[in-house]
Image (tube, rainbow, N blue to C red; front, side, top):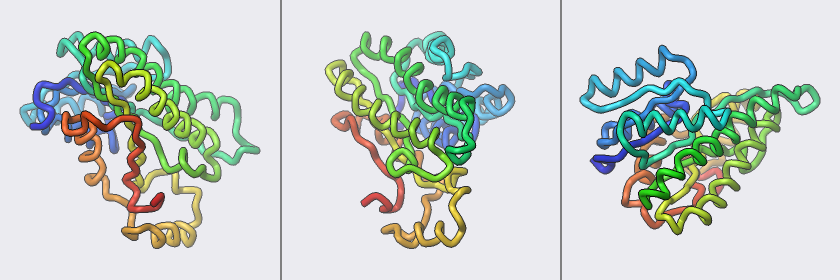
Length: 245
């Protein structure tokens, strides 16, 4: 129960890693806002948490607008009275080689993967500054650290998330708000453009020789959201099996 009494907002938490992080935080005692733009899967995660004895509320707003970011954070305030933890997880991909990438391919990814981090952080920080406490955890990617063929838009957005994290840590530290980023390595669509033989060589070169399992990732978020990590900020933590040693 390391997060007992805390209120967490996790964007893009109706599926995949976001869902696992939300479930993990709820099991640690946090009250959780589940966010996604498709009502059915959002509702399913809310029911899953409440059936386990936890507390959860649903938000169907997009992170891609400032109004949407404000409404997502307001869901936590209206239902639970505060916000202690923000996980900026919402993201999409629109993979194409640069020569074929359209303006919409670029803009849609930047709007959600980068502007979405800004819109929710901007909305949350007002409450966190007032209470002199907050934990913001952004989701980065190996693509933001090293680039990836066919993902100029996604790589640029995630590189922006890393720089944004470090800047926010410098600005918000005085208010007892920590800002960190996690770069997971689990198998995602990011790797679909890599030939299988190349992919196997990449994995073999990792210190631990495999991709992470989905359940190995949420504990890092839970740690960074807990008071055990109160003196950790501005960091990028790679859950990548040693690829970036």
